[in-house]
View (tube, rainbow, N blue to C red):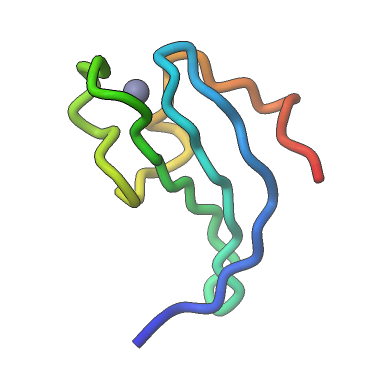
Length: 68
Ligand SMILES: [Zn+2]
């Protein structure tokens, strides 16, 4: 089963990882998925396709840069 999500935008973190921000349509929640880039990231939460809460992204996440 997969939830229907709408892509809101992408942002690159200072560590080099890429985050994709989505809105889950069924619950109207915002989700952020992290895609780890390279092998140098020490953030434990930055595993590939790992869902995190927007508030958990505290390093380098620029809300203003999210736009389509
Ligand atoms: Zn990272």
